Length: 511
Image (cartoon, rainbow, N blue to C red; front, side):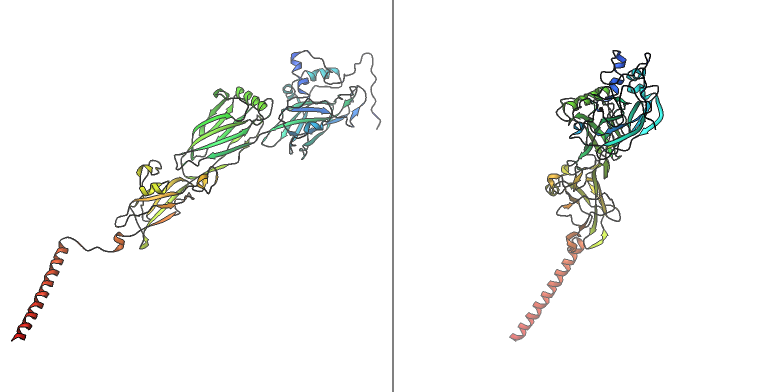
């Protein structure tokens, strides 16, 4: 194949000028917002440089038959925005940054831009990224997914202006804004040559979120559980969207919310900075344009700044209640869902039975529940736990069961297993305040553990002994008195007869 000939210029033919930082003098305000602001750094998180790669042509004339590539170096957004690229590979720009793998880019050629002419470069310089996006060729060039080093390439690109965007990215990554790249571009130091392989350093802001629950102080259904959502602020110069969605379990009822920023930025959120809706038991916090500006200001002062949403809910029913939240840190994100957290509420089931025959179940016993043994012994009514307005629970039915539903699990508090009172471990104390008819009242309270939500599994069998331990006391009343009198008469008769016999024997002995 014959080498490509560099065309000779005629007096009426003008060579395209090398396109670089100072190549186009543009005083038009619209154009200043155009390609010069968008080609090299369409988003502040983006740095584009050009390498002296093999696909480099001598002379000022572009080879229209040449092809080039976009080489992407993908890393997390640093705390501070780096310098604008100088057109050369810049390994120092990624020192200390975390590479991002699994991200795919696509590129589409912008229609109507002929970079072999000065008019084409001027048209490109007049474009904005948004305007370019509205007139793209159908052909789409895709990169491989970025590898463990954050590298990917869009290859075999004909000469032209390209609209580049991310098409695949993790849920916790805020994609970089679309940007424009020309193939070729001017070498930054050798200003009479073109570079056809373009190195791009787009940076992505990653957004993590967590959710936690505080319920250690809660005792029964009707009490509150507090949920805290903490989410990162994207380290982007422009934050175009920030939404937090918390779909509450039907066993929870929304009570209130508080939205704030953590850290040392000093930025204070006002009610006008976000909108809150609670329709369908779903809390949605949507930041307004004013709030988005505050988020961007906060992370610049304190990169560790986070959005905090404190959600207070009322627990309505017993059960193991799971809750999570989803964060949408930008318009294009799919949402980042937090790890679910649990609050657990269970049931005490007591079974009343005859101590002498446990198959004989007892009805009519009444109980109260207390938090301490001392209160249970004292049987102070005001200290008894009231669940939905009920503080006395009665054994009923042929099974003699008492169901006390809606107490926080003993060994689960603040979203985790606990074993000590300091961490929220709790037992409950049951006092019998009324015994079944014909049975003795329990003399001591019963300690129970709540670790089950079932209303059929017996937590504890409670035995009552019959009155007087089952022994029958002597009868009282008329029939009893008659029996005693008759007994006394018989005793006197026996004694009288004995006295007569003794008297007669003495008389005979004297005769």
